[in-house]
Image (cartoon, rainbow, N blue to C red; front, side, top):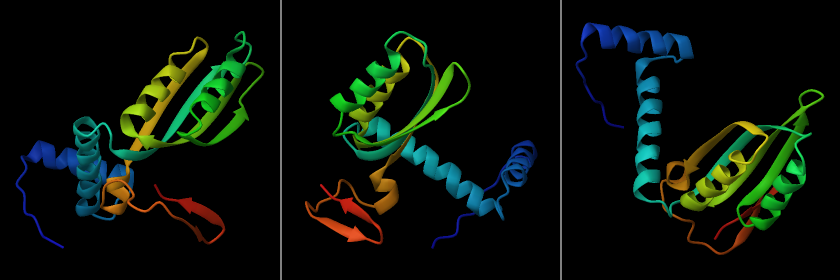
Length: 157
């Protein structure tokens, strides 16, 4: 592990200390590492659109909107290679929320998410993308094998 020393003006240091306290970090280093990871992930996704990633797509929709639920399901089936799993919950008489776990190339995941969010009747859509590099420290998985780990199947490649 490397140690970095930085100088900040008083206002920026105070704002950072407030952020550290508000988010419940034990120390500044943990907060700084998270901020740096998030920025590095954004740069990686911008510079390498074909980077392999995992993502969650969350959206709220009006289930009374004509054929919307069927269209959303059809979109997931049409992109079955990206769609890992979906969770659906009823919020009230009119609205549902779905969380879709996605896996694939970042540009394809982002395009799919945008097409879902853009559907009439969908609101409050948000995509959270994590490059696999950020998890494994590597690029795309190199193995074409699948293996069991605990109670679920991991598929590589």
